[in-house]
Length: 325
Image 1: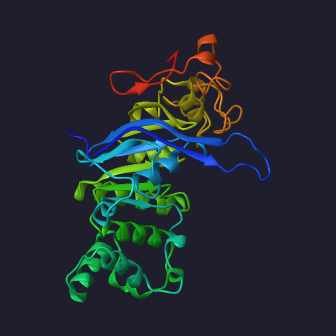
Image 2: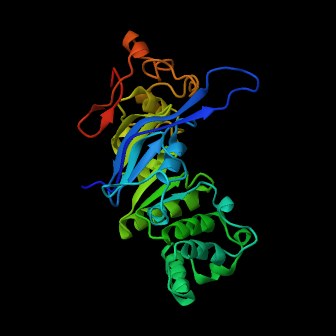
Image 3: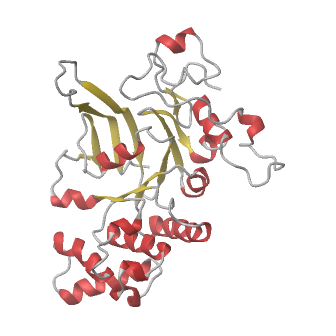
């Protein structure tokens, strides 16, 4: 299938200011290094990893909220500029993880949903904008009654759906979801997940899902990419990467996921994956030489300490490890 979103060798580094009064070398944060992936129409790519792995930085660059230091982001074969035109801003929409922070507490939800239409000049007149807003609100499972309420008058699950409705009103090609279910309870999460599965098919969207929640990634994603200290260490079909990964880092992540029934035998049981979280993520100011994961890896050898592994094809994806399982 032809790629809708194509990311090539994406790198983002931040230069920190020198401490006052000191003549030291500038300190550089290696937030994202040489990240590449593709997303097809109607496909969901989940990006998982610990805090500080660079997931949100990737999301911000994809949405045009931050400029890449190097690399390219292309949509339908056309490279998107670092400074997006209004037309290009519409094409990739970011949905952040806190729906309550996404709305003005003093203005109605109708006002919030009208704003993107006004900014992008969509809808010829008020009647057409009313129709567009109502159609999208109903598409996400709500009614016209919600539009004249304040954000404080609706539930967290309803706000999560309204955030999606607002992003979809500008007719994007790609949605970037940053922890879309992190602030929701279990029953509401299930509703939002089913909504996303339906919308990606109806609207032929490409979706990049940034999440810590492995169970949500398993339910939503077609493919999964695992990031560690700014780099993708493994990418492939979600059902394999999130159950039987070849890289030791995602194996450690999966071993740390709580299992409701410890006696249940499954492909991602702790016995088959080894220990859970071990050690701390190194500083992005001074990434370790060689493989960045080697200080925490139980399979480290001399080559891991000196040579950075390249992403090697695995048939259904790639893995960056000197000793893949």
